[in-house]
Image (cartoon, rainbow, N blue to C red; front, side, top):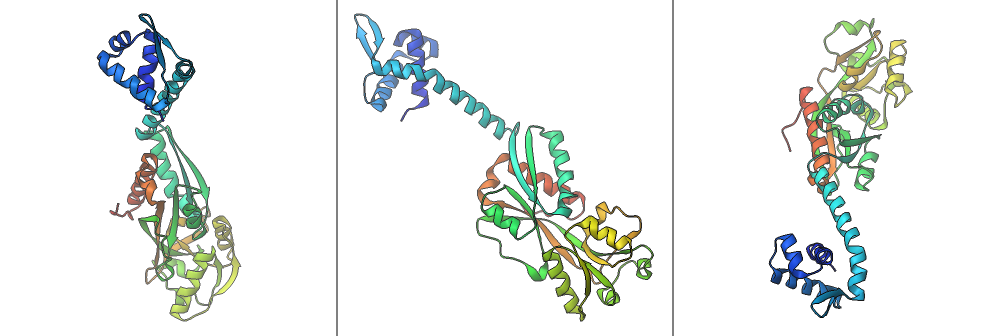
Length: 305
């Protein structure tokens, strides 16, 4: 209904007491002030000023608008300051969901750089596994989701989500440090066909069973847990071996565990996902840049935008 420029000019006219005084204060010509006030009166639908002799007085509508004009201008000023802070990355909030091994590796590295360079940008971190995390992202529950896919189990990405590849995460086998195969540089799944296994999350477990089937055996899964620290403890006690993503090697907490890559090599794709429109949000784009940089420092970054 109102043009903010007209409200600013109206406020100046009320403060100065005349069109000519407002024109001098704002650096406008008097005809420009007159035209703006006529336009505002057309928008309001009623006169705002009346002349009494050589003096100008506010009508009832003018008095009502005058009471609100300063509040309107103050609110606009606060809004402009907030928009400026957001676009210049002095502030902003990004909600991110990450699966556990990414939350323990890529995310802290990215957020440490972000905090150093842009302390006003706040990131809220939630934990979630795909594909549920992607469904929640699509519903708008957060701004960025870190998720992973396996070559034989790739899901279709919803049309309104953009996938940003970060790194290829090589799969490894965790085994007790004294295991006979620990002396090898890499191990084949078939060499471990008679072992007891500890399986991870549903998606990882599904891929593990798929890979075992591909090489011709059905694994003896003795334990199933989504908790990576529990997996490590079970392996350290000699209760089984586990096929885990390479990111886990960054935070092994047991010196009685060793990790060996698979031969032939196998990996999963780690990516960031974002709603297409959110790519234009400065704070979200900045967090994505930091995640890509953290992935590159691990030697697995992608050059894709």
